[in-house]
Length: 375
Image (cartoon, rainbow, N blue to C red):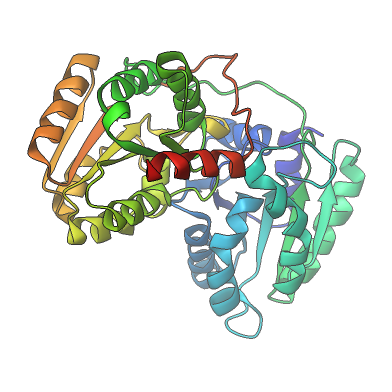
């Protein structure tokens, strides 16, 4: 099925606003939305999926029109509170259409962070009183019309409906290219970071390509990755995991290697960490202005920087760098100061096509990391 035809059917049931957080399973859908470029739909990439439910609620209150909210199934956790306490028909009764990318579909090979989420995707929707249909590459346009007609009937009852999208459902159409204007390659920046902190620090990295590139670079540089905890799920929570470690053992320097999309998703963590002000915490934010690991769609904060936000929250020292030399200098200065610091690194959207994935399971990596912590 062509995602552009799917969007046409969405328009036919009266939806004019699309909002959500990008997903690799929905890449062709997201590309089609970006290609539309506001001609048919208003489109917003929100900080997290729950915020998209909030936006959809406001749209309905002002216009009496439901919104489409798109998300990876991992984002179901972020929508449960606003869905249950705001949108549900027993509260305000706000209709909306969810388009959910199904990662970790049972019987399909996927990354470890998606396995359990994939098993419970349908059950979560059932518990949340959200009827749904599942579509795949065999779904015809006529069948899609029937599904969306059913969705409209449900939304007319002030309820929500979900379309669960299996991998490979949408055909690849013309891609959308976008450049952020930054020149430093992320993998080069990560190598500089490792060369200057790995041997005397413990590292926590965010989900996505950042962790995958760090994994490979650690093995190339040091023949191991045991001092690196890769947060392969839970987008936006790496900094709080790192803080938990920093407060548990003040004798060890903890370095959190974060992404801009992840920081934005749960930005309140910046304020919390700043308030606690751990002197053994170095926060490095890799900013490419995009959700690059799931298709490179610009974030809702693209083109902006985070160092001033961190400073306003109370981080002792913050800076933004664009070159390898400035990054190395900033790291060395942060280590000398021994105060809560944040370094923001502006990087391009470049990544290797042959980038690998961790060979060990998430559990094995956790055990190896905890062994390194205890030494």
